[in-house]
Image (cartoon, rainbow, N blue to C red):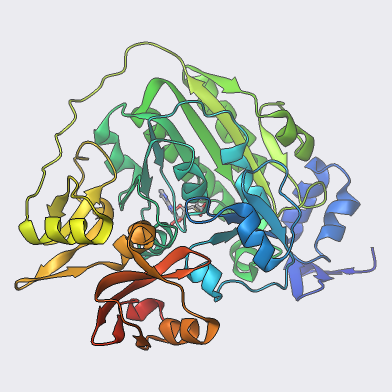
Length: 447
Ligand SMILES: C[S@@+](CC[C@H](N)C(=O)[O-])C[C@H]1O[C@@H](n2cnc3c(N)ncnc32)[C@H](O)[C@@H]1O
């Protein structure tokens, strides 16, 4: 193909619609040997990456949001998900700030939507940041622990969970190995493993630059170690989902095959819709999502059920319930009822789980209500995002909305705490006093 130029040092380069990309020669050689319709695959590098978003059904109905952003083609295999055009920029829009949407590349939506999850009580997302799959998973299970090893990425994960107003998710910052002490606790474990990122090449130049066979071998070793940890925290009868955004069989089929050969698991078949969007290399249970076959960047996934028997369940630690008159009074005045709440380092929160996780680095235990400053209770942004719709709500016009996002005060007559809404969904908080609404939108989130 004329668009691909070969250079001994750089490998092949192709002129993409949006930028130039140099694809490593060893990568292309491997792909030539495994990809169906290799020319079609190469051609996909001349096209812009695919983009999609999930409507946050906690905050808004699909039709209401689509009325405002235009009708969209639905992602056929993912609930509440729709395609976007590559050049659409919603990341700084008020709809995004208010957590009405989460932008994600479409094939990354597949692993969580490929299986009938049934009645999952407690799930673990072991490698969770920035949170796309956590956001999908939190809607499908009763309780979720969302873990990220890297502290700064865990902070991004927390921001995304908070923006979406998710109430059932604890965020932790541990290595998979550190999580092993939890024992066989979870009904589902997702390992969306760190990988060589070949499926990111169209949208992430760094992934191309960092690619090497040695890097991929390193990833494969790490992936297997993560799966071993996942095995130790999964209940018997529980579901293990493994996914990557790379194409290398070394990090995909080979890892899964080795794991299933060495442990007592059975493959689970994905839904028919997913089968029609994906292909397999060696076993029909292990699915590959390619950019020239379906709309998406690339993803590999497989699900396995751990065979039954009795799990070694450690006793669950009871939640330590906190009591505080000011917090209770705030809850009653804000949402009309008091609730059971906990406290950690001066922060009061509504626990996402009905028991305490025996871990040291819990980044968020649930929805933060706020903290006491002297004798004054200061509510937290997280509370407005998750519970704002139960409070007094003020829907600003577009000029006021921009002012609010800039951190300015608004005018208004309500006295007390309330929520600023966008299309009826909570964006952030304010405190009404003397005809003014003091802006409580966090400084770090302002535009
Ligand atoms: C593919 S990304 C996860 C994407 C995420 N599931 C989502 O949907 O947004 C893999 C994550 O694994 C984390 N990670 C890196 N090394 C790790 C390790 N040794 N153990 C566990 N996680 C690791 C990375 O920081 C990264 O956030």
